Amino acid sequence: MGEGMNPSRKPYTFDTPAMYRIRLEGFMDKQWSGYLGGMSVSAARRSGQAAVTTLTGELIDQAALMGVLNAVYDLGFALLKVERLHAPASAAEPQHPAEATDQAS
Image 1 (cartoon, rainbow, N blue to C red):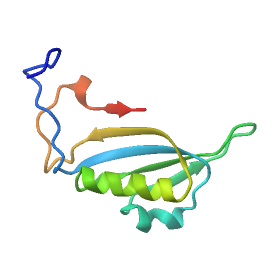
Image 2: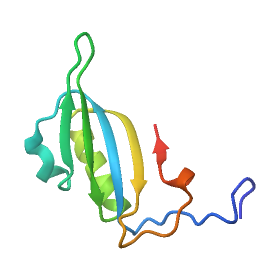
Image 3: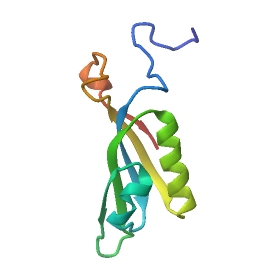
Image 4: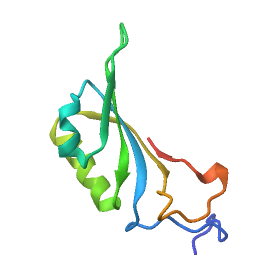
């Protein structure tokens, strides 16, 4: 085990379902949901700022997450933030409340 790793915390696995929230710069129409693994698509425009699109939904594993991220890249959207919200109840392992959200930005 590497230095600095918490031995009491189980690592996330690559092959389990999880809920994700992905934020993108720009406006994406809701019609793209099917192309993006069925994730819900919502976009907000604020005056004087670029639109931000949020994708939210359950993906079956991290390979599916990579598929969504590649699709977003192919569509020309800038990635702002990716969050692993939690595993769905059927696949969830007990987590401490502070571990319920992981972020990569």
